Image 1 (cartoon, rainbow, N blue to C red):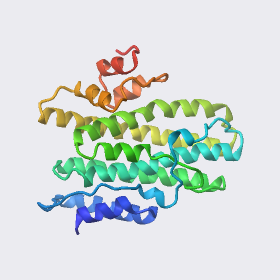
Image 2: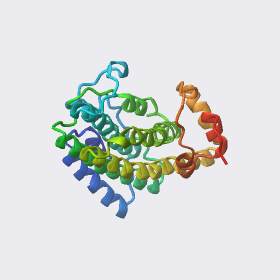
Image 3: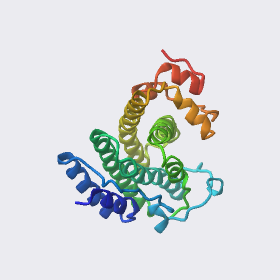
Image 4: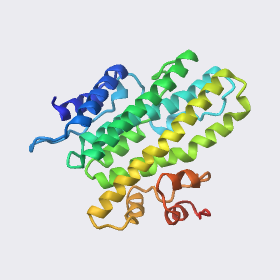
Length: 271
């Protein structure tokens, strides 16, 4: 099995069933064999995300605000936005394996496992979209996560800082706020299904951020860097001063953030 060729195909694949089958094969192989790339292996930089085959990609500012969750279309736009995040996360996890072949076997297994989780999350959410009468690709999307992966393609330390420890960690802040907004609509069966799905995703995303924290810490140790390098990386990408009104202290602590980091990020109490 040509592992890195298969990873490349899986990342570029837009059909979810094929992407899932390839990821399952990769995980099964990696569980039994060490992933080794050839000496002349050079990962490509993907020019477009795999979802560009069926999604209209626009600038973030071009997306309409999601406020009306009492209509089918309004609820569908919310589900679609979350579905897009989970689909994007599949390719990010696969790319973390493909792009950094020098990392340990345990690292590769971790991110292949994350990719399988994200596929499952995507399929749960898309099933809700279908029940609402829509499909993934029916609303415009932005390429923010894809762009972040390309910006960090040169450095695995920056990748771990920006993708799991920034973007996925932000999801831990946002998820409970979405549930809070939906809570008084629980009598709607579709809203109840969405809340239940978000609960599953929330718990598993904590584990994903934990994995990002583990490998960020590993790289800091290997390179003899203080973990405060995290803040320099955020500053480099102009992410340090982002306003964070709903900072999830307990989830971030569980995911590996120290109270020192949390206080610097959000100016909140942490013990």
